Amino acid sequence: MADLNLDFDEGVILETEGVHRSGNGGRNSYIKNMLLTNKNIIYVTSQKTGGMFSKSVDVVDKVPLAEVKVINGQVLATQKKTDLFEYALQIQFIGGTEEYSYSEGSKKITNQWVNELNKLLGNGQPVATQGFAKKNDFFGGLSGLASSVGSMAGTLGQSVSSAAKQAADQAGLSYGNAKALMEARREEQAQEETAFQQAFAPQTAPPPVSRTTGSFCVNCGTKLDPGAKFCPECGAAVGSSAPSVNVPPIPTAASVNPAARQQEFAGTVLKCPNCGAVISQTTAVCPECGHHITGQAAVSSVQAFSDKLMLLESRRKGAGIGQLLGVSVDPVDNQKLSLIRSFPIPNTIDDIQEFMLLAIANIDVGLSKNTLNNRYQSKMKSGESSLTMPRTISDAWVAKMKQAFQKAAAAFPNDPAFAYVRQLYVDKMTELKMKIDE
Image (cartoon, rainbow, N blue to C red; front, top):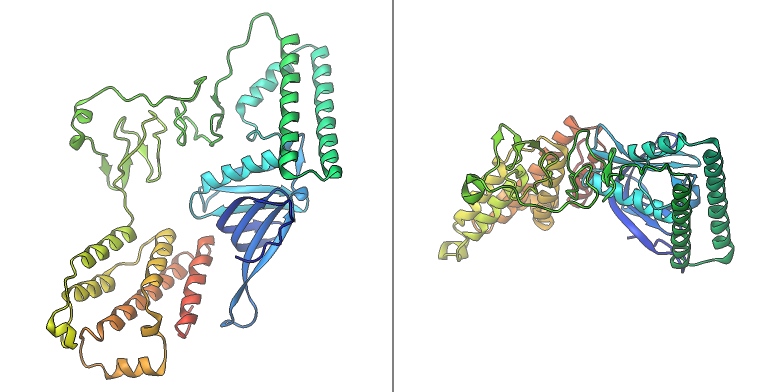
């Protein structure tokens, strides 16, 4: 990675690879590495220094955390539902709003960034949910005196927050001391709010606040789908006052016989083995019954293809006399070549990206590189043998890599993940000294 030029008291808190950046005046780019420190948000991008065949260099760009908008102690960084990706991170800067999308793990990554930004700049709490709205409605119905006192307390809290931040900046506190100062300020505000509630609360105590309310799980901060009864990340029940305990379901005939306990399939539809609710391939906890999903049978075509290649390699035996003399071919190599040539290119951009990585890893540049010696060897070949088969297999991987790129270019030209696929293709074709057809 490029030199980040961090300050002596600056440390990396989060690092995410493969990020698509959009917004802020039409900016649309692919970020190789996106890092969060206690002072900056850092972007590492690859840029070419000259023409098409020049080498790429890493360029480091920094945005100070002071540019992130913070209102009333709440950092304007949220998790947003998108069309292309499951979730995206949206951050409001002083100069405009930007979105960051991820091809994998978008839900977990956006949660991590929102939580860490709140710890650094705000009050460390998740984005406001319906539960907080109900709380505001309740206090909104109090007398004018209570409203006035609440307003004064809020103003005092903001003043304390601003004064604490200013004092930390002036004193040049380290990240650890500044974080401890913010934790102390949050604890003090919580004590003031508790005293306020006890002073002005009605005689009849309100019902206990649910631990998992609204559209976010308060136990882990994960955004909940409408109607979900359990958190899909931690399994906490919606409306419970304590973290959910994984209680095993009532034994049935299927659970007594593990061999009979299988997921149901209707085409490509996956179902929870406990309650039958429809789930996705990445579901870890059923949103209907809270059952932890294990042993999912959904395997991508690329993973199945890779497993077949490994199975063939496991069947390879010692070379015979004919193979040692270069007059015959190992049957495993023939089967491997046939499997590579007949493999259908996947239909999703994620699977194509995975296949591109597999193909590139199996290409022997020394054998497939467009050189005069390799062209002569290919032209003079009259038949396959143990001496020519490695080059033939490597060339087959090159052909499949080209097919995968052409399919991605035709089917997903506007998908942000295509930029990564294209970069893989261009880099490998440049290394092979082959013409790049786009």
